Length: 242
Image (cartoon, rainbow, N blue to C red):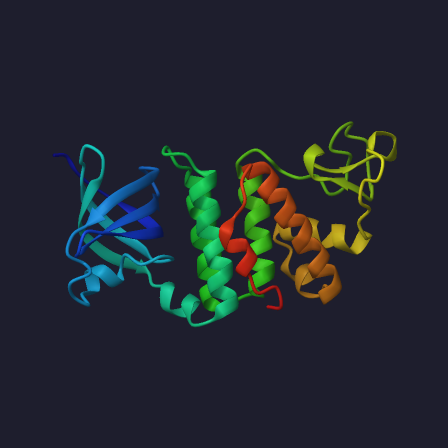
């Protein structure tokens, strides 16, 4: 069996038998990997602790027919403990890894990998509010996948903005002459926040009031789930007060 190694972030784990665990990872060079970590549930070994969700590790694997086998794991980014001790960070990180799992195919994406690592690191370090970090991650992840939303110019005609009608199904704000009847209208401050989150303009994002953040989060959630064509189970547990 061919042996290979890569850097990977753990997305989720499942129990296998009495002692093993199936680990789903997004790797830097080999895309999405599903592999077995043998014996990790029998002891409190460091090997097993390096393969928990939100952890980033240098892993060595044997290539198997259906599942690869993890033989070594060395920690690169120990974000799990810092994230799980804070509920808002934990729920935000849970949405991030679920999104990464759904939005990347088996071939993976280096950009998605690097984006996820950066977002988890930011959560662990409490660099920004957990809800803001999550919304920024979701917008950027969708953009990498080819679903970049428009918050200024019309998403249908390209007519210069600003526009206030926002239609998830059409890709963002739209001009009045193409807006469907009853299309929701967004506060200009909400659109400014959404644009800031997409661009990573943290001073603007941090200065936004709670009411604007709440409206922006609702837009991000709707836009994400529409384009993923499925619901995110972890999204309902997110603490939007952080």
